[in-house]
Image (tube, rainbow, N blue to C red; front, side, top):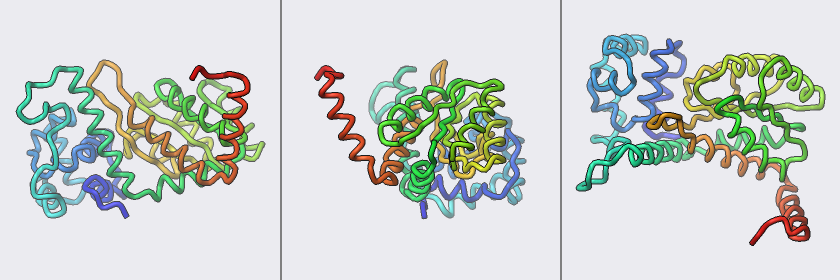
Amino acid sequence: MNDTPGARLQALFEGHRLTPTQRRIAHWMVRRAADVPFLSSVELAELAGVSQPSVTRFAVALGFDGYPALRRHLREVAPVEPARPAPGAAPSGGAEANAYQQAVHAEIENLRHLAELLADPAPAERAGRLLAASRPLPVLGLRAAAAQARGFAYFAAKVHPDVRVLDEGGSMLTDRIDTAVRAGASALLCFALPRHPREVVDALEYARAAGLTVVTVADSAFAPVARHSDLLLPAAVGTALAFDTACGPMLLGRVLLEAMCDGLPDAQARLEEFDAGAAARGLFVE
């Protein structure tokens, strides 16, 4: 069982119906799990980009008398001091980081958080088994997430016998899900990144109704796709630049590839066969 501060926070939020604003607060609390017990309600509100009363209402929604009671509870289960500098901060004694460096520092923090979540490998291992067993394996990703879906599918096709990329929306999307189900698919992998297209939510709802087990890589455990996923693995995106950065979701996709390979007995043989063919064709410049 993962017992990191972030995991304990997620367990605290489970079972509560949260509003979009409250999900945003929860998301930022998980991202800054080591710091949250030491933040005031005003500081947390600024971090999450919400109002201070929203933070108070959030604490009450979780069953506490107010934010001070929530913070006292968090201090009982958290380290006695913040674990590390805030994302974007310059190294101790150094000059203040510029905007580009801050974006990199924020992504490093996202990857640290992902590493903490992967301390419990069971969810990734379960996802790997589900993906390996699905023949064919549909991989869904629209708009901002299309690149993640295509990247995963490119490598997955080297070890999985039938990978189908669903990277275009429209009326054909449900048709392609139906085709995959008729061909024997048992699971669907979805990459869901902000801003979340309504089509993705609708497609996941449709896929589950069609009998598919939905495995989702999303930017947050509280993303809109969460309630339409059987297994959701979160990996935060960076928001420091004009366009989001997705190092965490990309790395988590590679982790799922590794876990899927563990569930495919002939994965290594397929890779060796590909390497031999590539060498014979002179496919790559060494």
